[in-house]
Image 1 (cartoon, rainbow over the protein chains, first blue to last red):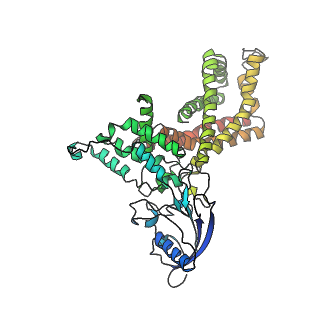
Image 2: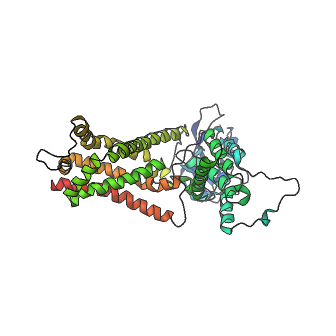
Length: 255
Length: 211
């Protein structure tokens, strides 16, 4: 280690476009402070690449405070890296040591095709939301105040917990089946638990699950890996709830 | 998967219970075996349902595995799967196939000879040439060979690994998850996954030692 920080070997997935085959390339980065976030280390790597006349590595990022869900890196074999309950932007370099080799790969899923380098297309999640992740409310000016409807504290808390899902896709990335069940179940649950969401509950769960399957995500086999790697701690309770909702809707719905 | 899994969990429990009779009372084992082997309801209603349940579970398991594998066509260069999920949950297809291979030996030992005796030779009496029930001595005879006993023991280890995940996973799949009851189900699943295969192993070793 130099006096300024760590020297690391990075094995980074490079892919020019969605048509390109792509491959792992190796880069050396020097003087990495343990206080840097992982994305700041990536910035340093890109500065070094640019200085050397090479093309920087493309990666998704936005808020850099664990809220937006943009940063999506599979680091050393784990979604968002070795830490728990954090996104990649919240991962700090103190989790690594001088001389380490770090593999940096994009989310791998048929439903998340690579656009470039480490950037994947997660619009499949958007299409699932469009299929039913909403409530239909007349907003013409006389909308009822949501706070005027009594809601049990437990239900409100569980709905809020489900709503903390930021849609980063770590659940898909880490699941051995590339299943999106944790994401979809969180989005089903956040509405199914509240009175406003119960009206369209049957159509919602049927349509969202149908779209999830159409996108090419795998099926859940209850390994629980998604819950472990989820930066927001979304619980497997949501998957069980969605399974109940789905079975009930399948039996009783007119569809 | 879950519904056929529940059915097979019940079947395993009754199979182990009846087999255990061979340890504590050969006469009772003979009587129950004769009943199970000749009762029309068991033979022509429950047995086909059981066969369907096994085949359905296997076929759905293989289909699920193939579909899930196709959901990630490009694998990770580095993946630390053991950091977030246990081996049993990640390898149900391996333990399941090992159990299916065991069925070949098990059917060769018991089911095919039984079908031959009853439906090809037409002997529904359940009696041996000496006039007593044949079931207990046939069971004992199968566990003389140490290699066969070893194969049975290894197969039941795979069954245990399969059940370690399968039991509690079946409840999760049908949406049965509750703060109070899920911890109990998980403990019950572990107990079941140890006790049932251990029971089968004990029975095999008991007859190997006491034949």
